Length: 282
Ligand code: ATP
Ligand code: MG
Image 1: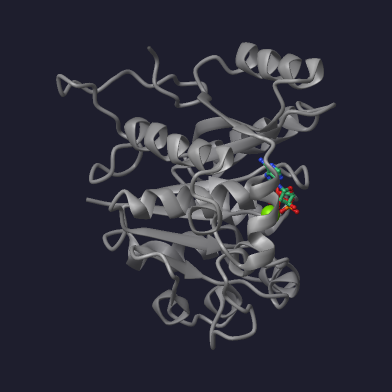
Image 2: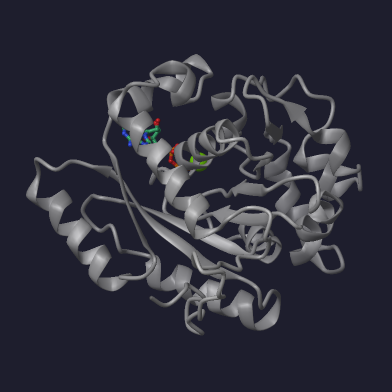
């Protein structure tokens, strides 16, 4: 049994990557899964969103990638039983430059995570808003990428570049990489624009788009400033229910205990996997 490794990526900023990483992980852990969240963004928003001071842990992802510190030494517990964190801090901003001079520079994260594959059901990587070397490391380490798309003007902008990057990573570095899902975030059913984006994305990615829509929710925006997940901060809010539903959909798509994004239907047969995106065909 090996962990599903999922990178949450979109080079566009502020689309809900970190909010999704943190809250998806919280609900996966609450469902009884063993979950590791890897904060690979120097902004350290996932770290602070979980109430961890980025300067407090002795080791962070930086030391793991650059100084060969064993990743186990950087793992920090969180308030959620079953959810652990590899924290980030600003040092990681320098890592990109330092990594560039290394051998196998795209594979540093994949190698660092290897000793953990049997320890978790899901390893979730929160990527920064760029297609730089840190994101490439995330995609090289992952079996699947979840792409959050904000239901706003120009939502699909940049996605072709992201899909091209995924294609290149699959061809050159990591043939296991699949599009694990496209997630519509900050949806507002009252606006035509938001509804139009939902329709467009579902049309572009009919297989990949999660049925769960993440609504725009004040509570989701507030929770990180309290260092809390939505499960702690406002578990009855619409945003919390949406992330709970996403975790359920996610676990059905990628049952844990099976590893590497193999999925089975209820009669136990393996389903066909689309060669283009790797998403299962219905
Ligand atoms: P970055 O590219 O900077 O890493 P990101 O893609 O990780 O950003 P988030 O940090 O998750 O995006 O979200 C951007 C901002 O929007 C944050 O202030 C967050 O609290 C807020 N936010 C995220 N999702 C929602 C939502 N569904 N409703 C309301 N606010 C949200
Ligand atoms: Mg972020």
